[in-house]
Length: 352
Ligand code: SF4
Image (cartoon, rainbow, N blue to C red; front, side):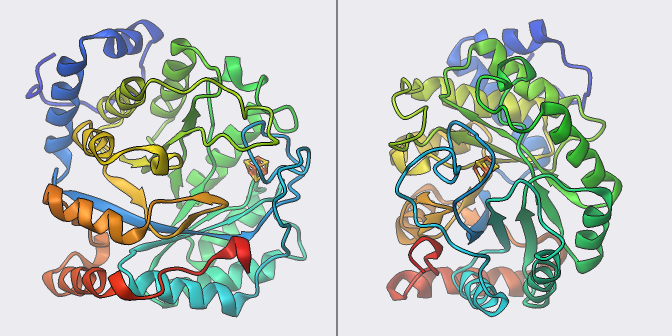
């Protein structure tokens, strides 16, 4: 396929096709991905989200990569659900430093009836600040999904993590089918889906391809596809896993871009370990979303000012919100990004 061939949105990818994409020469793959990217996006704009942990640690799930799982001793401070007011203060600060989307994550199996009213208030409050809202709270039932949508939640994040075949090696307390069910409820409720996975857990090429096939063959592609590099945390079962070849990580982004041409592909956890050249290559491969701020849940995230300097050097500009995609709003974001360099950057949930 040439880089300029019109990209088609498909939902019928086969393993052989996807492996063929992965296995082509690196330059051909990047050229193709960049060609697809330019058909649907401004190649010099990157969407910027801020992520806040609203409830950290003591999670009953056993995800082997996760420092928040109560099954492993990682020395992480456990916290109760944050107060609504503190969440709104953090959101206001995120807005002031240029984020357009505020993502709130809770380490739960699923939200409880007791917590739901607070969670809904957070959504309403963040929305009222003029930010896009996103949450990741674990498994949802239909009623909870509808309530979140009614409160104004724009995106729900629920990652598939890996292929169905490899999944049981990583998580035993929640099934793949449960995850797909939550995603179907989210879609039915009219919210947008954020769903992706993690590289570096010992998975094979087939598993990486299998994850992308699951995502791309959903009835509608997730609007946002986070691709994470495992952050190895001492105390978790995956702490000693082998590093992913950086070029294989870039290949994953490029294949995701080709298979889901209209989705935002997010360079997500693990960005701190990537040098600037690798991040630039990730944008060239079609990644067009990042998390921004000092903390990405409980693991480090590159300093926000470093991000902005890199954007500047690459001629990249932050993407405005869809509904406010006008010059005034864009100018305000850019101004805020310049001003934030000397300011206190971000509410640190892990040390609150
Ligand atoms: S990834 Fe989410 S569900 Fe799994 S242990 Fe961590 S916080 Fe819990």
